[in-house]
Image (cartoon, rainbow, N blue to C red; front, side, top):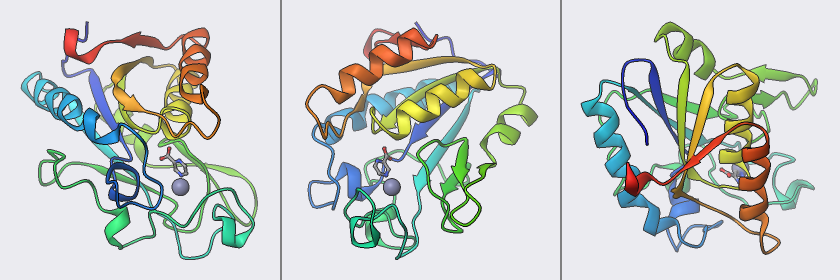
Length: 201
Ligand code: VGL
Ligand code: ZN
């Protein structure tokens, strides 16, 4: 049961066309089904005066993240393209804080941190500073995808000392290998992340 209040942040991870729309280049099965769940959490969080933050995967045209440049993924979420836009059915109020990961070609999955493509160093995104300034110690994570960006965002949240809950009906998995999403949830639970049902709260 989530009690949204001023010390809580709802982090909506990568609800972008390339992942959430069936025409997207890295469509995540089941992504459309989580949109209403996520929108309900956004409404509850706003009603409770919790912070609502959105992240976007935000890649340059060439990055070692993409298969054509030696990485694992089809081209997706290229900066300033349709695929990188938030899904139009997502209730993202104007002025909401947006965290864009990879604007300088950095790589990585977490909304909290990125890997500098040149030095290999891990660098923070503005998310932790934003949460710190808002007095947040409790993070609720929803979005895409369970086995990548949700997973690393939740793990970073724990590493940074937050209480972290992932809403299992508010996430969906890429499942490159069948069961990856379920395994990720198991890993998160073992790391101290609470798993909860958004519809029940
Ligand atoms: C993601 C694969 C590649 C994600 C991002 O947002 O989970 N997955 N890039
Ligand atoms: Zn990506």
